[in-house]
Image 1: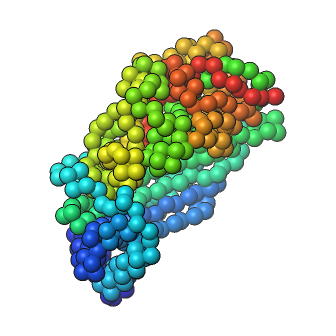
Image 2 (image 1 turned 45 degrees about the horizontal axis):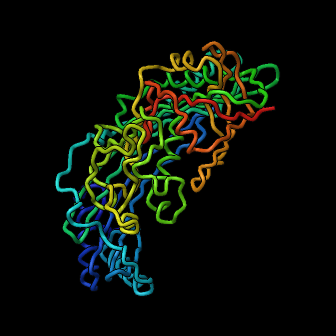
Image 3 (image 1 turned 60 degrees about the vertical axis):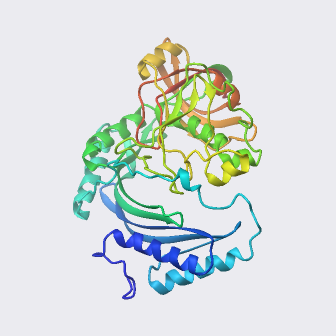
Length: 449
């Protein structure tokens, strides 16, 4: 860091707020009617070991200031990684200059004052991992070694990775809001290659948490990666057909991501969503509940307020299958004549309520059909709902896995697919921002050989 930079190792997180205040003072001094500033810093490292050797070591130490200014309904934005007083002033000056050339937009501006968070709940998001590089290398080696020793058919590796990252962000605006949130994220991952009869398959596994004490052990991750790879050996194609499809929990979350993309305000006010004008309408079967849980302690998606300082709250997006709410920040809400839902920056811990069956129970319920464990490609049209993605997984008969399958395509329309959800499993994947168990759908088109 430069000698003029007031933010060094010893200054502490409070200096982030001071930088934000300085930016706001500069903006109002230049005549801005409103302004906000987000100041962040992060640090961490990751190490990857492949075939026992260290392949990469990556350190990161980042910092950033983003300033948004408003002159009435004209807005400008600028950013910098230099927190010196001169750099902050120059950045604000640039944002103000940009605002002079932008068109009037009556929806532009800060979030309404009465929607801002007044209490900041403690969500237990920060758990630093005091991990030395040599120790991280040893853990990665342990993870990969376990994967490679499971079975002689594991013939190659894409490596095992240990990563640890943490950061803090201060947000402030001219409505008087100030907030400071720190968080960490750590992970262990491994991917290996298996070979049988001259044909190869790969798969992977990972564990990711905010608290390193809650990570799966490197041996467990390596073992899971190897066994997931081995079960794919001998994969074959199936003929084109219609059959039930069970999305394993890690890929089932993608169905909810398509739903949230269609419910996003920016898609709606552009009239580019198949959920347009669907509030109050049944979009899923009556047993489906989808809700947001932004205050779960230690969860990846938890946050006390959104990117505009608006208080986050537990809320239903879908109740009894009926669409109750969209996903709105202040700008998109104004464009739609609605109120923000506290989703500037996205949804947080989006959750679909589980039923009573685990994966084995869902296989029994399906009886005959396709278990999908991997999706390939991005053939999803949020405007129309058309869905077509490559897939791999397992053919199931009499509730038991028979053999692995590959080179198939699942096709349908999300509007119909959502209505065809038959069960949601209790095998919830909590590693990401979307929390879902495995999801069983009634008949879909499966294109094969």
